[in-house]
Length: 445
Image (tube, rainbow, N blue to C red):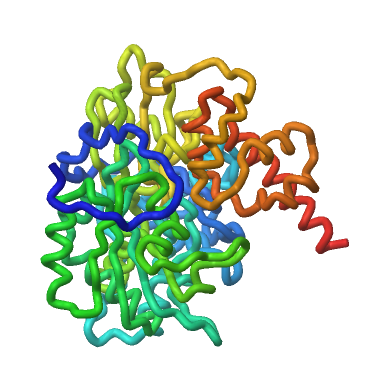
């Protein structure tokens, strides 16, 4: 029986098996530093960072080794002390090769830190500049430069900051452990974001399947009359920006618009803590917190890992894979990316490494569309996935554009619920990329 129940949610969505019992009661462990790290120059949305080091250079953990290139970009810090082995093109968890700085690690665990700032007296501009220096990116999956999101722009009317504590993807328990183990710091991270944006109201959205975290957060937030902990229905994708805003503020973000357009800024629990660590401790973003789970891994864990650690090293630290393991996924099972090369590194926004068995994959043969409409019923933003998928297959991209394919957030609820096992979201993703490229060509013509 749930200690907290809720009716706050959004229309549509699904409730897949959670599998969180594999790791939810496991406290974070700090993984030993790897012997070598691979640091892609693109770990964020925006322009790649520009390297500041060359082969043979000695570097220290926390040192900036690549600078931001423009406004939508972030600096990259060395996650270990050591020597630059080379700068080369390496495979990344996205599946695409990217220019990367490879560093052979030394034995030192010292980190270059900035001077700590007092969270009670720090100025908004100081928060923004510290976050910019720290190279923080959003931990919710998109890896958008956080500095941009916490810097108010002219004529913006932001009324609320919402922290996403839903963690609605199956298996993942990283944010849950943060809310349990660093409760007070989560609240302080939220307050820093609110101060940076000049916002007077903060919320933490959390699903009702996390009673211990809800209890601790409510107790910690009780001393602040401008922070509310909102208990939400357990449903996927409850943690998506538009779904959170609908459930908490009862506002709908129009197609093609952003949360800012309805007066809200959304940040992840992990992002709030990264901001807290940068401001209060002077730490750059050189570690990733992630869940390693699935029935294909021998020892599930919640880990703090140095950015750039190869996936293979993490799997080895967790005891290796089982005999019936069949797939490795970075992220959650709904929106994550299957891996084909385990030398790919953990990046700043890596939230999980899942090792799944064939039973968990639950693979079935694709059949003809049944015209049942279930994908339409569960789509959280009211699209028609069957049409969009079919338009993509037939190269009818103008029609796909007319049916708002670019609005799709690729959550995968349509594919999950399809009784014909059609890979709807994969076709939609392909069509979306082609439509966006088509729109870019129009603008440049």
